[in-house]
Amino acid sequence: MQKRKLKIAIIGLTSCEGCEFALLDTGREFLDFLKQIDLAEFRLLEEEFDHNTYYDICFIEGSPITKENVKTLKEAREKSKYLIALGNCAAMGGVHEIKNYHDKKKIKEYIYGQKSTVANPDIKEIDNIVKVDFKISGCPINADEFYKVVYALMRDERVNIPQRPVCFECQARGYECLLQKGEPCLGPIILGGCEAICLKSKMACQGCRGLFDGAQVQIMMKKLIKEHGQEKMNRIIEIFGLRDDIEEKL
Ligand code: SF4
Ligand code: SF4
Ligand code: SF4
Image (cartoon, rainbow, N blue to C red; front, side):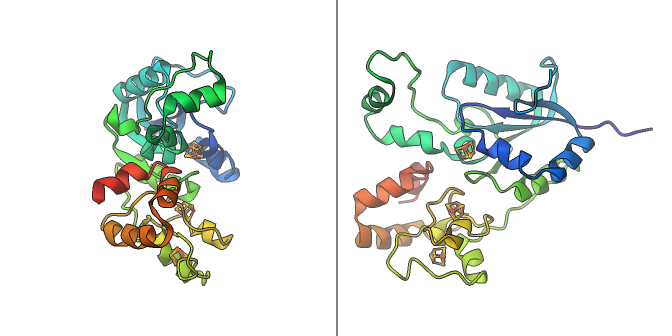
């Protein structure tokens, strides 16, 4: 008897859709993946999906900002065996979370004008609202990591992401250390797996993949704050929703 194909949904909340595009960007690999599954939801494909269904695996991209987003997220959880946060926004709050640390009313008025009625709640990672079984971090995600995770889950197995810093990949590739040159690079406390892509372009790591387990956050932040000041470091760690995670460790 032929084995049933698993139903997999990729659902976007409020986001730039960059993590979904990272999958499309893999071209043939994505098409091969689609052949092995029953795609149950993916807004970048113009298909009519059946919404009255369950999902074996559901990936959630973006932030639950609007009431509709929260409803979609809760419904997705109810329908899913595994629910996975896809990318920095879903897993860590993303760039949207910057406003949590500032006067969000002022920010809204600056962007949308005083009369705007656009929703303006505090930004929350999706695991504040529903149970999350696994997180794939990054802005955008590393598609190779997505495939490792999804193929493992399709076998009912879990992937362990190696808990080592961005520095590991940075130095293995022979990139110049920006921290040693006095730049505020977060690489020593941030989870590797991105192939140190920013360092390849001589940009300091700003932490889109989040902290790895066992990172020496206190020591690193003390050093960076001493060299660059609290205000500048706050600006950096706010970019990818890292500030609340760091403050928890201090
Ligand atoms: S994590 Fe980055 S690329 Fe992915 S949806 Fe959010 S902002 Fe876009
Ligand atoms: S540049 Fe950053 S990521 Fe690379 S080794 Fe130095 S501190 Fe680590
Ligand atoms: S180097 Fe840092 S900011 Fe750049 S992709 Fe990797 S984790 Fe994200």
